[in-house]
Image (cartoon, rainbow, N blue to C red; front, top):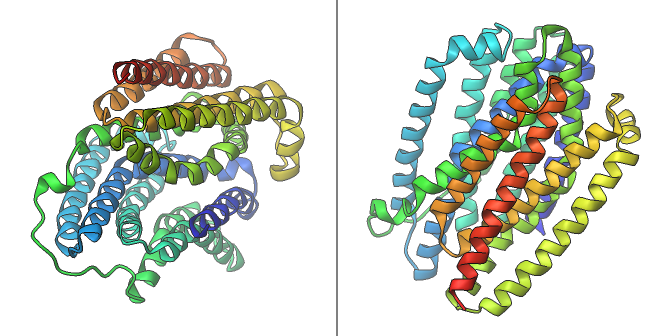
Length: 405
């Protein structure tokens, strides 16, 4: 319940930030670089750091069950986080000229903020892993909830004192995640006890496959706005921002699915370990029915009431067909995410990574070949890629479960 409250606060803050930010900067066109930075940051940071958080939480929980201290595990994971951070920053530095000119329209302040923002999320995910692995759910929820809240607070503060330079807003949202980490660290929530030395195999089991799959899944989740920013002309900056609003609106069911996902994988993994495959199938079947119902309802809502909702929340216009396609792609992505968790529970990490790679390639091909209209081709690419992921994971899960009969 504590984590669910944190997720709700984070969700409301995220949607509010886009409204507050656009108002502070004077409109959708002026806010477009910040929206581009937002989606790029959330494609990179969770993609590379979420597997570290998950492995840290898993290893600490395992040690906690055995009565061992987790200090050595945290030290090893910190080294791994540093290595991943350095590799990604080097990759970004190499691609900086192309990335800055093509994605940020030549604005190097945005590129600098992307680097700082990416590095800021390293301690965020480390702190979340420590809290989840040691059962400290309240500080975990504080870190989750405060991210969007601090971004709004920083934006309002800059606007209140008359700052108009967009670079200042970019760096304000880049460092915002660190404030909550500092707060819970001062209160001692990130302390761990000494324990037996940690071996690398204790924290890197399936890490490579998990990293590859998570990076591709995060890129796919944010692919729509990123592709729109790359494909649209300079005169379409306000259209790109409106498209980003549509993506956010279509993600409402997917965002709330995070609360289910937090408990889904451990439960499925436990049932698989106990070889309770009949209950495993029943639970997964119920989940698929729930996700299908949510997806159908969301797509219908997007087609009929999506334009009205978008005007109400963001004072922006998109067609019902666009919002229906975005809602459908979000529903299919949610289904793929649910089925991939079941495949992970059966310890098939390599195939989960392969499934997300297939989906990302499908998005690239679908966006490239489907249409001449920049936004329509992205919508088709999103639906096709999520459908490819559902098919890949569904076929693999069916084969694995048949082999277990």
